[in-house]
Amino acid sequence: MTMPPKAPVPKAPATKAQVKVTIYTTWLCPYCAAARRLLKSKGAQFEEIDAPRGSPARDEAIEKSGGRQTVPQIFIGDTAVGGYDELRALEEAGRLDPLLAP
Image 1 (cartoon, rainbow, N blue to C red):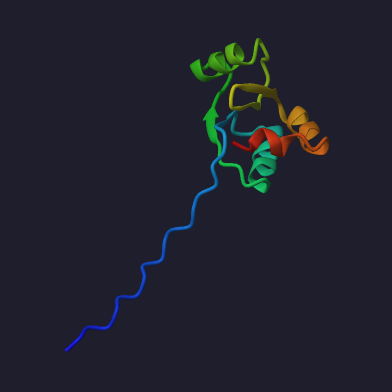
Image 2: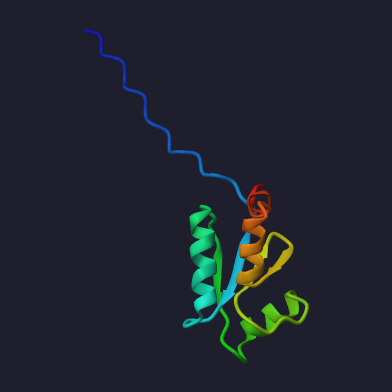
């Protein structure tokens, strides 16, 4: 008696490779929420770091951004993008997708 062939095991879908995206935010910041929405709409996965004023995370964001004190502070790979306005400007200029691509 022969056994029927086994059905192939479906493979997990390949995950889209991308550069590392980090966003420093605060809880009630509307620009932070807008930046999150834009990044999510692009399918970008990102690390969000809570950075309230006076925290070590905020100090880190200020240092990495070259002295910018506001949130959000967005980093794509090694590029300090800036805040939401700069992120939106990149999107409108068609330059955000290439930055997010590996």
